[in-house]
Image (cartoon, rainbow, N blue to C red):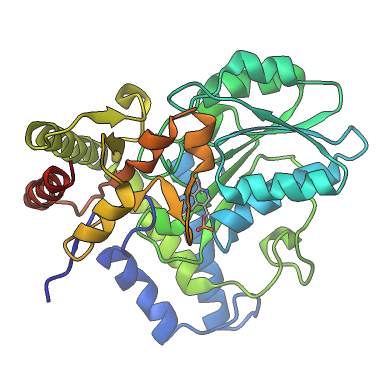
Length: 379
Ligand SMILES: Cc1ncc(COP(=O)(O)O)c(C=O)c1O
């Protein structure tokens, strides 16, 4: 059976062959403990430090500002909890947005239960936070602003540079969840003015279960877990060398090919949208402003079409996500679309199609045929 065309790169990416090749010797041969002084241990320590430099280079950081984690979720947890717990004397107020990934919202909910106060900033119809709202929300006891770089569902890019400037002006720490942006668009910690930034390996062609956290030099952070001294004592535990090597290589590749990949993502998404608009006999509504959006992400609603029905009818041939979750007898609209005040019918018709560096024009043309044929049967 032929494999379906994969258009769900925001959910996860395949591991790049160059990345798999780079990590393989660390699974097969180089098993030494990086903390031991033996030759094989030292080799692995050096491999980790090389990867740290590769990650740092991609985001304009110093290698010493990077720690390796198990992924975006852990990085977000560590950044938010770590920054709040170390600053309890200053206060317990956190500013975030209503369109964050659960790896941020659930940490904020947990902290709220622990006595913190959270300001959940609203967004506009395209899911964008207004920097003026961030400034207005700052109080003397505000310890952290956590606002994502780019949204996983609709692709909207937040005005992080402006928010970074506001945070700096008021002396408030600023964390951004960059799980979706790193590797797709330019992500520079100094340009953005962030103190903390989360990276998820499996969104940029590294394996699942590896990520990194950028921690600006001089910043103090409480630990999530305790143990020996690995990762400057901040993230103890014997390092996952093969996956760290993989993340390093993935970041190196992303940096080398950022412009080419960016253009390719943009072109494949445009071809997809143009094709769907031409062939579908229903109105297509865009949920994001494509001039301020990840180049690969297309969140659209087909009028009078239920997204789940569409996705399941084409699922053997094309894979993508929907903007709502289907439960026993109800459809639950995603909190992101809710915050954008997308009407329930549009939300129920919303699909997220996300292209990747391996998406071909031929795949796009086939996907257009398959999706439009099914949409036209449903309207
Ligand atoms: C914006 C965003 N943040 C965090 C995560 C979680 O990352 P991980 O799956 O590596 O824990 C994801 C993954 O879907 C994401 O899209």
